[in-house]
Image (cartoon, rainbow, N blue to C red; front, side, top):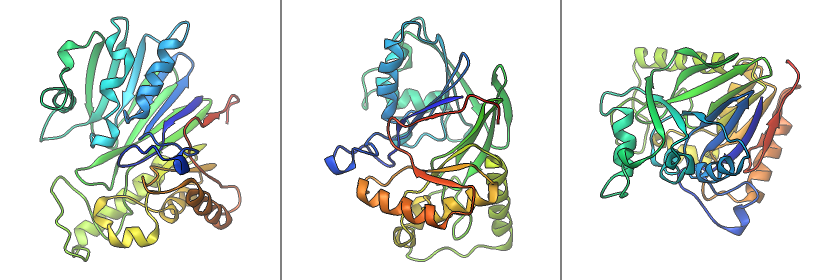
Length: 305
Protein backbone atom coordinates (compact mmCIF):
# COMPACT_ATOMS: atom_id res chain seq x y z
CA UNK A 1 0.00 0.00 0.00
CA UNK A 2 1.35 3.38 -1.07
CA UNK A 3 -0.36 6.55 0.18
CA UNK A 4 0.34 10.12 -0.87
CA UNK A 5 -1.40 13.13 0.63
CA UNK A 6 -2.31 15.93 -1.80
CA UNK A 7 -4.50 18.13 0.40
CA UNK A 8 -4.82 18.47 4.17
CA UNK A 9 -6.71 21.72 4.76
CA UNK A 10 -10.34 22.08 5.78
CA UNK A 11 -13.04 24.57 4.76
CA UNK A 12 -11.16 26.37 1.98
CA UNK A 13 -7.68 26.53 0.42
CA UNK A 14 -5.06 28.89 1.80
CA UNK A 15 -1.90 30.37 0.31
CA UNK A 16 0.05 32.00 3.12
CA UNK A 17 3.78 31.48 3.63
CA UNK A 18 3.41 30.51 7.28
CA UNK A 19 1.05 27.66 6.31
CA UNK A 20 2.85 26.08 3.37
CA UNK A 21 4.79 23.39 5.24
CA UNK A 22 1.55 21.54 6.05
CA UNK A 23 -0.09 22.70 2.83
CA UNK A 24 -2.91 24.89 1.66
CA UNK A 25 -5.03 22.57 -0.49
CA UNK A 26 -8.23 20.97 0.76
CA UNK A 27 -8.64 17.28 1.34
CA UNK A 28 -7.37 14.74 -1.17
CA UNK A 29 -5.43 11.50 -0.66
CA UNK A 30 -4.13 8.97 -3.21
CA UNK A 31 -3.89 5.27 -2.34
CA UNK A 32 -2.19 2.67 -4.56
CA UNK A 33 -2.51 -1.06 -3.94
CA UNK A 34 -0.96 -2.91 -6.85
CA UNK A 35 -2.77 -1.67 -9.97
CA UNK A 36 -5.70 -0.28 -7.97
CA UNK A 37 -5.68 3.52 -7.71
CA UNK A 38 -8.05 5.03 -5.13
CA UNK A 39 -8.66 8.73 -4.62
CA UNK A 40 -10.11 9.91 -1.32
CA UNK A 41 -12.08 13.13 -1.67
CA UNK A 42 -11.87 15.69 -4.45
CA UNK A 43 -10.71 18.84 -2.69
CA UNK A 44 -8.38 21.31 -4.37
CA UNK A 45 -5.50 18.86 -3.93
CA UNK A 46 -7.11 16.75 -6.65
CA UNK A 47 -5.86 19.20 -9.28
CA UNK A 48 -2.23 18.51 -8.38
CA UNK A 49 -2.92 14.78 -8.23
CA UNK A 50 -4.46 14.89 -11.70
CA UNK A 51 -1.41 16.64 -13.13
CA UNK A 52 0.83 14.02 -11.55
CA UNK A 53 -1.24 11.15 -12.97
CA UNK A 54 -1.14 12.60 -16.48
CA UNK A 55 2.66 12.84 -16.32
CA UNK A 56 3.10 9.15 -15.55
CA UNK A 57 4.50 7.10 -18.47
CA UNK A 58 1.61 4.66 -18.12
CA UNK A 59 -1.13 6.33 -16.03
CA UNK A 60 -3.88 4.11 -14.62
CA UNK A 61 -6.89 3.86 -16.91
CA UNK A 62 -9.38 3.14 -14.13
CA UNK A 63 -9.58 5.43 -11.11
CA UNK A 64 -11.76 4.95 -8.04
CA UNK A 65 -12.93 8.12 -6.26
CA UNK A 66 -14.43 7.80 -2.77
CA UNK A 67 -16.17 10.99 -1.67
CA UNK A 68 -16.89 11.39 2.03
CA UNK A 69 -19.53 14.08 1.35
CA UNK A 70 -20.19 16.86 -1.11
CA UNK A 71 -19.50 19.96 0.93
CA UNK A 72 -17.64 22.37 -1.30
CA UNK A 73 -14.15 21.91 0.16
CA UNK A 74 -14.34 18.19 -0.64
CA UNK A 75 -15.32 18.49 -4.31
CA UNK A 76 -13.94 21.83 -5.53
CA UNK A 77 -10.97 20.15 -7.22
CA UNK A 78 -13.13 17.92 -9.40
CA UNK A 79 -13.62 20.36 -12.34
CA UNK A 80 -9.84 20.85 -12.51
CA UNK A 81 -8.90 17.15 -12.43
CA UNK A 82 -7.12 16.61 -15.76
CA UNK A 83 -7.99 12.90 -16.23
CA UNK A 84 -11.72 13.67 -16.60
CA UNK A 85 -10.90 15.40 -19.90
CA UNK A 86 -9.15 12.31 -21.29
CA UNK A 87 -11.19 9.71 -23.22
CA UNK A 88 -8.93 6.95 -21.94
CA UNK A 89 -9.99 7.54 -18.32
CA UNK A 90 -12.65 5.45 -16.60
CA UNK A 91 -13.64 6.99 -13.28
CA UNK A 92 -15.85 5.27 -10.72
CA UNK A 93 -17.26 7.72 -8.15
CA UNK A 94 -18.65 6.52 -4.82
CA UNK A 95 -20.55 8.74 -2.42
CA UNK A 96 -23.33 8.91 0.12
CA UNK A 97 -26.88 8.15 -0.97
CA UNK A 98 -29.16 11.06 -0.14
CA UNK A 99 -32.81 11.88 -0.50
CA UNK A 100 -32.26 15.52 -1.53
CA UNK A 101 -30.26 14.84 -4.71
CA UNK A 102 -28.41 12.04 -6.45
CA UNK A 103 -24.63 12.02 -6.33
CA UNK A 104 -24.46 12.53 -10.09
CA UNK A 105 -26.82 15.50 -9.98
CA UNK A 106 -24.90 17.15 -7.15
CA UNK A 107 -21.59 16.89 -9.01
CA UNK A 108 -23.18 17.97 -12.28
CA UNK A 109 -24.74 21.03 -10.64
CA UNK A 110 -21.36 22.02 -9.21
CA UNK A 111 -19.89 21.99 -12.74
CA UNK A 112 -22.77 23.68 -14.51
CA UNK A 113 -23.99 27.22 -15.16
CA UNK A 114 -24.06 29.55 -13.26
CA UNK A 115 -21.17 28.09 -11.22
CA UNK A 116 -19.04 26.68 -14.06
CA UNK A 117 -19.53 26.35 -17.83
CA UNK A 118 -18.77 22.63 -18.01
CA UNK A 119 -21.29 19.99 -16.94
CA UNK A 120 -20.72 16.26 -16.85
CA UNK A 121 -21.91 15.73 -20.43
CA UNK A 122 -18.98 17.75 -21.75
CA UNK A 123 -16.35 15.52 -20.12
CA UNK A 124 -14.41 13.00 -22.20
CA UNK A 125 -13.85 10.42 -19.46
CA UNK A 126 -16.22 7.55 -18.78
CA UNK A 127 -17.94 8.18 -15.44
CA UNK A 128 -19.87 5.76 -13.27
CA UNK A 129 -21.62 6.83 -10.08
CA UNK A 130 -22.30 4.52 -7.14
CA UNK A 131 -24.42 5.67 -4.21
CA UNK A 132 -23.67 3.89 -0.97
CA UNK A 133 -24.68 4.21 2.66
CA UNK A 134 -22.83 3.77 5.91
CA UNK A 135 -22.00 0.34 7.33
CA UNK A 136 -21.36 -1.24 3.93
CA UNK A 137 -18.36 -3.23 2.71
CA UNK A 138 -17.29 -3.99 -0.82
CA UNK A 139 -14.26 -5.06 -2.84
CA UNK A 140 -12.67 -2.35 -4.95
CA UNK A 141 -9.84 -4.33 -6.50
CA UNK A 142 -7.86 -7.53 -5.96
CA UNK A 143 -7.46 -7.87 -2.18
CA UNK A 144 -8.68 -4.28 -1.62
CA UNK A 145 -11.71 -3.93 0.63
CA UNK A 146 -13.66 -0.81 1.51
CA UNK A 147 -15.84 -0.30 4.58
CA UNK A 148 -17.87 2.82 5.34
CA UNK A 149 -19.21 4.33 8.54
CA UNK A 150 -21.34 7.37 9.28
CA UNK A 151 -19.55 10.36 10.76
CA UNK A 152 -21.17 13.03 12.92
CA UNK A 153 -21.26 15.91 10.46
CA UNK A 154 -24.00 18.25 9.18
CA UNK A 155 -26.12 16.62 6.45
CA UNK A 156 -24.23 13.38 7.14
CA UNK A 157 -20.89 12.19 5.80
CA UNK A 158 -18.90 8.97 5.49
CA UNK A 159 -15.61 7.70 6.80
CA UNK A 160 -13.77 5.01 4.84
CA UNK A 161 -11.52 2.09 5.74
CA UNK A 162 -9.25 0.75 2.98
CA UNK A 163 -7.87 -2.66 3.85
CA UNK A 164 -5.32 -4.71 1.92
CA UNK A 165 -2.68 -7.34 2.78
CA UNK A 166 -0.08 -4.55 2.85
CA UNK A 167 -1.79 -2.06 5.11
CA UNK A 168 -4.97 -0.51 6.49
CA UNK A 169 -5.85 3.16 6.11
CA UNK A 170 -8.88 4.76 7.76
CA UNK A 171 -9.99 8.16 6.43
CA UNK A 172 -12.28 10.34 8.54
CA UNK A 173 -11.76 13.96 7.47
CA UNK A 174 -15.01 15.45 8.80
CA UNK A 175 -16.64 14.53 12.08
CA UNK A 176 -17.63 16.13 15.31
CA UNK A 177 -17.38 14.17 18.57
CA UNK A 178 -20.09 11.72 19.51
CA UNK A 179 -21.66 13.84 22.21
CA UNK A 180 -23.20 17.30 22.42
CA UNK A 181 -24.88 17.26 18.97
CA UNK A 182 -26.30 14.59 16.66
CA UNK A 183 -26.23 15.79 13.06
CA UNK A 184 -28.75 14.68 10.47
CA UNK A 185 -30.19 16.02 7.22
CA UNK A 186 -31.69 19.15 8.68
CA UNK A 187 -30.12 22.56 9.22
CA UNK A 188 -29.08 23.13 12.82
CA UNK A 189 -29.85 26.62 14.08
CA UNK A 190 -27.23 27.42 16.71
CA UNK A 191 -28.62 29.26 19.73
CA UNK A 192 -25.46 29.43 21.78
CA UNK A 193 -25.92 26.20 23.67
CA UNK A 194 -26.19 22.54 22.62
CA UNK A 195 -29.67 21.18 21.99
CA UNK A 196 -31.22 18.81 24.47
CA UNK A 197 -30.56 15.20 23.45
CA UNK A 198 -33.17 12.59 24.33
CA UNK A 199 -32.26 9.01 25.20
CA UNK A 200 -32.67 7.72 21.63
CA UNK A 201 -30.28 10.33 20.26
CA UNK A 202 -27.70 9.52 22.91
CA UNK A 203 -27.91 5.83 22.00
CA UNK A 204 -27.47 6.71 18.32
CA UNK A 205 -24.37 8.75 19.10
CA UNK A 206 -22.89 5.93 21.15
CA UNK A 207 -23.54 3.46 18.30
CA UNK A 208 -21.84 5.87 15.89
CA UNK A 209 -18.85 6.17 18.20
CA UNK A 210 -18.52 2.38 18.47
CA UNK A 211 -18.85 2.05 14.69
CA UNK A 212 -16.08 4.63 14.23
CA UNK A 213 -13.78 2.73 16.58
CA UNK A 214 -14.56 -0.49 14.72
CA UNK A 215 -13.88 1.23 11.40
CA UNK A 216 -10.42 2.27 12.55
CA UNK A 217 -9.60 -0.87 14.55
CA UNK A 218 -6.02 -2.00 14.01
CA UNK A 219 -5.34 0.54 11.26
CA UNK A 220 -1.80 1.35 10.28
CA UNK A 221 -2.84 4.94 9.62
CA UNK A 222 -5.82 6.95 10.80
CA UNK A 223 -6.42 10.32 9.11
CA UNK A 224 -8.88 12.07 11.41
CA UNK A 225 -10.60 15.44 11.68
CA UNK A 226 -8.63 17.64 14.07
CA UNK A 227 -9.67 21.07 12.83
CA UNK A 228 -10.58 22.76 16.11
CA UNK A 229 -8.86 23.56 19.35
CA UNK A 230 -10.96 22.88 22.42
CA UNK A 231 -11.78 26.59 22.64
CA UNK A 232 -12.91 26.67 19.00
CA UNK A 233 -15.06 23.58 19.46
CA UNK A 234 -16.80 25.18 22.44
CA UNK A 235 -17.64 28.15 20.22
CA UNK A 236 -18.57 26.27 17.04
CA UNK A 237 -19.81 22.74 17.92
CA UNK A 238 -22.53 23.09 15.26
CA UNK A 239 -19.91 23.06 12.48
CA UNK A 240 -19.35 19.32 12.92
CA UNK A 241 -15.59 19.20 13.38
CA UNK A 242 -13.42 17.66 16.06
CA UNK A 243 -10.28 18.36 18.06
CA UNK A 244 -6.91 16.59 18.29
CA UNK A 245 -7.92 15.28 21.71
CA UNK A 246 -11.06 13.72 20.31
CA UNK A 247 -9.04 12.20 17.47
CA UNK A 248 -6.65 10.74 20.05
CA UNK A 249 -9.54 9.16 21.95
CA UNK A 250 -10.73 7.31 18.86
CA UNK A 251 -7.20 6.32 17.82
CA UNK A 252 -6.33 4.95 21.26
CA UNK A 253 -9.60 3.02 21.57
CA UNK A 254 -9.14 1.57 18.08
CA UNK A 255 -5.54 0.52 18.66
CA UNK A 256 -4.19 2.23 15.55
CA UNK A 257 -0.47 2.40 14.83
CA UNK A 258 -0.32 6.03 13.70
CA UNK A 259 -2.73 8.95 14.08
CA UNK A 260 -2.42 11.67 11.46
CA UNK A 261 -4.12 14.92 12.43
CA UNK A 262 -6.03 16.14 9.39
CA UNK A 263 -8.44 18.75 7.98
CA UNK A 264 -6.34 21.57 9.40
CA UNK A 265 -8.14 24.81 10.17
CA UNK A 266 -7.52 27.37 7.39
CA UNK A 267 -6.28 29.83 10.03
CA UNK A 268 -3.81 27.40 11.62
CA UNK A 269 -0.13 28.16 10.97
CA UNK A 270 2.65 25.60 10.67
CA UNK A 271 4.06 26.63 14.05
CA UNK A 272 0.67 26.20 15.70
CA UNK A 273 0.22 22.76 14.14
CA UNK A 274 3.71 21.80 15.37
CA UNK A 275 2.74 22.73 18.93
CA UNK A 276 -0.60 20.90 18.81
CA UNK A 277 1.06 17.76 17.46
CA UNK A 278 3.77 17.79 20.12
CA UNK A 279 1.17 17.96 22.88
CA UNK A 280 -0.80 15.04 21.46
CA UNK A 281 2.30 12.89 20.98
CA UNK A 282 3.26 13.52 24.60
CA UNK A 283 -0.22 12.39 25.69
CA UNK A 284 -0.36 9.35 23.40
CA UNK A 285 -0.39 5.87 24.92
CA UNK A 286 2.61 3.62 24.24
CA UNK A 287 2.70 2.34 20.66
CA UNK A 288 0.67 5.18 19.15
CA UNK A 289 2.57 7.62 16.96
CA UNK A 290 1.02 11.04 16.32
CA UNK A 291 1.89 13.29 13.40
CA UNK A 292 0.15 16.06 11.50
CA UNK A 293 -0.58 15.26 7.86
CA UNK A 294 1.13 17.50 5.33
CA UNK A 295 0.97 17.94 1.58
CA UNK A 296 3.39 15.59 -0.12
CA UNK A 297 3.50 13.17 2.82
CA UNK A 298 4.05 9.59 1.68
CA UNK A 299 3.00 6.59 3.75
CA UNK A 300 4.23 3.21 2.67
CA UNK A 301 4.14 -0.34 3.94
CA UNK A 302 5.53 -3.16 1.87
CA UNK A 303 5.44 -6.13 4.17
CA UNK A 304 2.25 -7.72 5.40
CA UNK A 305 1.33 -6.25 8.82
